[in-house]
Length: 389
Ligand code: ARG
Image (cartoon, rainbow, N blue to C red; front, side, top):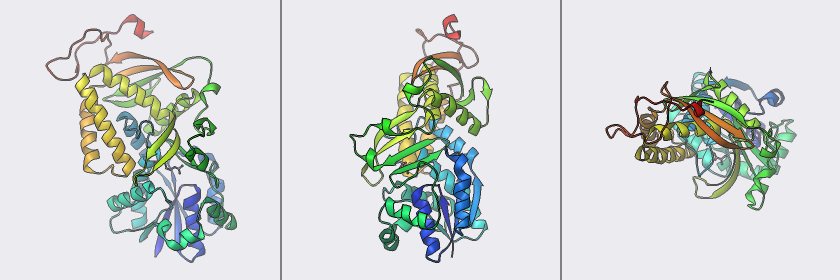
């Protein structure tokens, strides 16, 4: 059997790959570019893997990753109050990108390095079923032998060190980082202690609010039919758009959330998340649809966003609920074509200005909605001089 395994650069997938290799399994790694923040250090990681005798396949999935992330930002699908689902949404992108390659190259098994918590195990399995039916999914972490060989992260660290392998920076026996264009997730035992402040985490996608500039920075986000499409007037491809948003929001300290979340298996876990660009775009989209829809439509969008967020978290983005939620959100957001100015200051959006709605501009004061349509549609709208500044 030819076994493929997706290597994130984190400790567990690498330890599992290394253990399988040591135990005579024909394992080959897939390394995806999904815009990891530590990407510049990838060469050290990949060359150590190759030197250890594990063949690698590299796949560029940045555009797909960015499209999936912008969807989640536009639909405001954050989980448990503040997690932008960066890890969960990447799983579908990853499996979709590797499935055709596994098939073409004749692999019969997809292994994953997902450990205990259960979320990623379920996600990988569901997406493999969707994108690569017929492929066997091997969850090494459910193998008693592997669990015995590597009972904890310290043992995994010993396994990779003995094979001459290195993780991507940030990943140690104590700290786990999962990162892509949408955001970074930090987990570790210290954070599981609720008495530890999220400020302990060293940011990879920007600065802490107290290190941000001591002046307000205004950024313009163009939203079309509820989708962020321009930044400061520049229309960019998805991956560049999200990257630019990460840069401006990150340097202003935006987008750190501290979440005690509910895993799919019912346990709680603490995660500290960075997602500056997602946060920025979601603010813009909210400003956009709030100003053009009525209360019932905005409430419905909120409900659908939460349903979609749970689906992304659980690994069901291709399921019926997610599809229905998307269709409903598309419908509601269709009226939201707006340019929004967001004023960023030390970790917050401290001001916002709607500069243009549907190509014209306007004041919301005492406007009424036409004909029970729940939004203004293309009714004329004029901007006040003040908002234009
Ligand atoms: N709890 C998050 C999720 O299930 C993140 C998991 C991965 N994070 C990590 N640092 N390894 O989506």
